[in-house]
Image 1 (tube, helix red, strand yellow):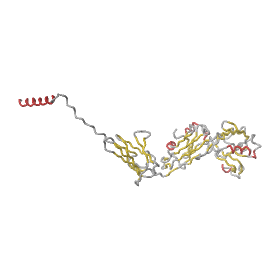
Image 2 (image 1 turned 90 degrees about the vertical axis):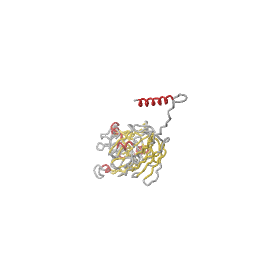
Image 3 (image 1 turned 60 degrees about the vertical axis):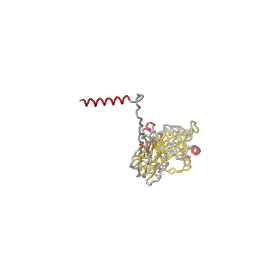
Image 4 (image 1 turned 120 degrees about the horizontal axis):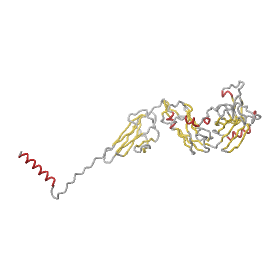
Length: 392
């Protein structure tokens, strides 16, 4: 017991001496330590080994606890692919590498990103991926044509030579901008045809640009967009004519001004003209009217093959505004045509010179039904038109 007591006392004296210190009797400072900087982390996408990647997919790089210093992209042969890095529009913490020219279909690429942090070792990440090889590539046909001036009734029409399965994705990549903003939307007429128009006729003297950004877009069933297309055109003067089959008169407006009133002969009771807004699609100085083009044989009792002048086509149902000197006596009094709007040669010459593709001829007062033609867009009520969008 005495030994144990002596040991405890000695230990206590040592501890007391340590607490008192020596010299001035102040408290000793704790030693200073510096934390090591966190390691740099780099992540890239698409995932390493990914296949069937769209050539327009964003190549994203995110860096934690450091700064991106270098990005390299090479193709499968090791050739460098030029490009640039910018902040992602959706997430400022993510950088996106964009090629100077679009990546190709059916090609393997490797992206390597390097980053450095303060006082830490550089870090790198890499991904190798392969773009999709389409079974079929499509470039749509578009109207109006680039550089064309058209009337206020001309819709934008896009035609595909194969059915579009994913209409919503395609529609998101069809962009229309205009110098006078409109409320226009797209309407799918079929799996291969989509049109764009505003709720009312286009504002006159408007510049329109249509971008079909379809390269790298999956249209469905192995079909992909072949290229991007841009079409710029102009909406010209507002020409809207009202052809009334009941009063046998056609009023021609230039903007809001009535500039001509012509006596007409519209479709006879056996061949009435269609009601509704017709759109001018072509102008023929000379044309042969042939009943076989709409299913009536030339040698049948109702058939005909007649040369005419100043023919302004307003539908693909065989309807024109044209010179008909043989019906001048009936013009303004009686409907005797096969569905066309008959004018005297002098009046038809004036109307031909006045007209342009995209102008509108609204036919009213006929006993026929509503127009169904290649361009019957304006006969579709607006709410029904909007419901035809894949994004509704």
